[in-house]
Amino acid sequence: KKAFVPAITAIALCATLLSAPAHADLRPEPVPGGVAAIIVAPAGSPRPEVSFDGRPVLLRQRADGWHAVVGLPLDTPVGEQTLQVGPEGNSRPQSFAVGPKAYPEQRLTIKNPKMVTPPADELARIAEERERQLAIRSRFRDVPVSRLDLDLPADGRLSSRFGLRRIFNGEPRAPHTGLDVAVPTGTPIRAPADGVVSLVDDLYFNGKTVFVDHGQGFVSMVCHLDQARVEVGQKVARGERLGDAGSSGRATGPHLHWSVYLNGAAVDPALFIAPRPAR
Ligand code: ZN
Image 1: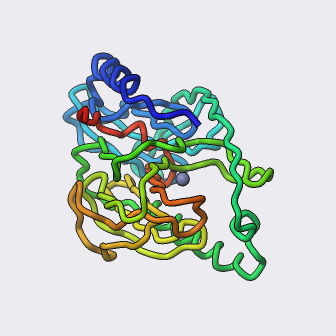
Image 2 (image 1 turned 120 degrees about the horizontal axis):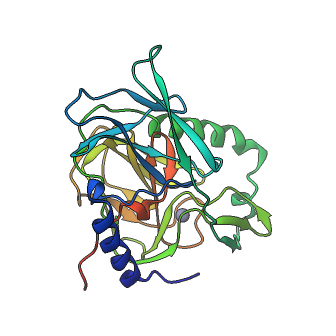
């Protein structure tokens, strides 16, 4: 595993700020697991309705027009993808290109075999939890979203990056759909941005988990917590404590796992991280 190198990120962020003033708070990267920012209507026109893969997408008005900010699932095929722009039944297709991205492989050893291949009597629970989380992260709460930059929910070394193709005990499993931060048990886990708590639960794989809905299908999830300190429906401000880090669920040790979703798709949280002051 490579250590996170803040200097390189700082240089990359500066380059992005110079080249893409429309989204100073986001690094669009139209690749599987990335984010596409596509102009869909002129500035000053009414907000258009836009969907991708049948789901509404986040829209923001910039100086050069309305931008659709589209999350691209990790299994998106490289090539042309299509947005639907306009009201249902009267929409026009707008295509955009998705480029390739190679994510590295990660091999992990998990001591508890039930966390690699769950026992048959847990499969119904796991399936129900998957559906529930999918519904929560696919919700579209139609409120203005003024900022897309997110704060890292805990200070620590970034230990596993988004997109890693995972092999657990020699068996291929789903890719890593979040960003891991190595922090000791009890470390405060904070809201990456303003939002409303949309799920608090104790799940088979994710352990103690909190979802925060930032608006327009922009959602954060933090998990493997030792404990949650918020309730469903609670409004939270950026930086407010959501819970404490731990190692609940399928975790090899205490750490934070943070996922970010756009239009239901897990995307790389690193694309939204605000520059951190030097310490
Ligand atoms: Zn993780």
